[in-house]
Structure formats: C-alpha cells, structure tokens
Image 1 (cartoon, rainbow, N blue to C red):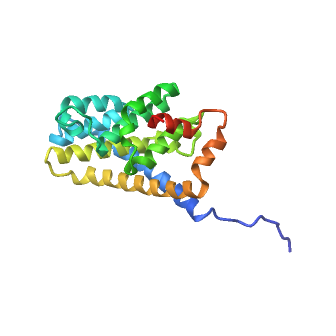
Image 2: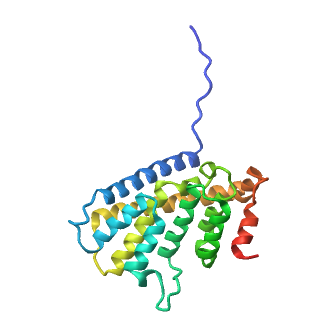
Image 3: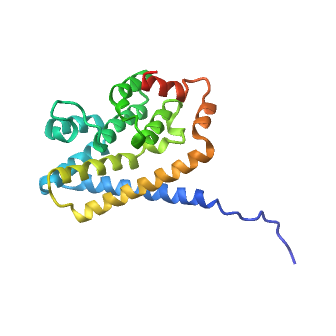
Length: 233
C-alpha cells in the first residue's frame, strides 16, 4: 500500500472567508447597481427616476465634483441652507468625500487633496463621520493608495454607495414613492457596504490600524500629521 504525504488542508479563518464573500458580493452588487442606472433610458423614466439615472452616470464615471455642481444648480436646498451655508448631512458628506477619493485615485498631489479636504471636510470631524473620514485620510499616507488596507474606498462599491445615498435622498426630496426593483438593489448595496464597514472596523481594532499605517510608510507624511493639518492644529 502506497501512502502519500500531503500537507493537512486548512480552511481560512472564518473572518477571512466572510470578508472575501462580502467583498465579492458588494463589488458585484455595485456593478449591477451602476449597470442598471447606466442602462436606463432617462427619457422613458419619470420624476426622481430620471434624476437617479443622471446621478448614476456621474458616479459610474467617477465625476463626484460634477454631481455636486448638478445638485447645487438643480436642487440647491438639498445641500445648502437658505443663507448659502453648505449643509452637514449625509448626502453632502458622501459627495464631498467621494471627490477627495477621486483625487486620491487619480494620484493628485497630496497637498492639493489635503487642501480640498481642509476646505470641505473639516466640518465633518464629528463622531458620525470620524471613522470613514479617518479611513479616507489614511490613504494619503501611502505612496500606492491602491495597496492600502482602505483601498476598497477607491473602488466601484463606494461609487455605487454614493449613487444610492444621493438617489434615495432625491426620491424623498421630490416626494415620490421609491421604485421597488431599483431601490431594492440599492438597499442591498447599502446593506453590504455597512457589512463591509462593520468588518473593517473589527479588523482595524485588532490590528491597531493607525500603528500599521505609520509602520508601513515611516518616511512619508504621517497619518497624525495629516489629521493635525486637517483639524488646523
């Protein structure tokens, strides 16, 4: 009888498998959401559905800054107060932070991106947005942001999440019922995004995320120095 020595098969840890599943599903759902939006004919849609198609097209192209201009021109009261002050709601945060992410994705100079964030995102340095804002900031400390632990923020899933948040807000703003098919897909995208965020938070706590970031690129501008600059310290 011949025996063959084989290395014992080990399954990846449960948290690793869960992350792989969430990553796959959120990416596919993001693609499906944007494909649905891109495939819609705005001339055949009505009301908020037509606007959602436009929002989806902006985000599919990574044009968060154009989406911001579109809302300022067409639906200003959704994003600014009566006195012209920019609101601090979720829609505003998602669009402005996405603009910063697109700048990082395009590898714009760090000082330019940081200047944008100082001007537009300092007001969001509150508990509700702190974790996400810290994740965006940390990308600036990597010479190759696409290899950072937070690189998923630069992908299509984040763009889809922005499109979903803005689209849902516009539907409510216009006082129209939600479209069950598309909104169900959008809702699933948001659920997966929240699942990813919860999982990322757990991983970062275990790995002491900020220490990892500092150790990864000690010669570059540090996370804390960027945070201090953003907060004006």
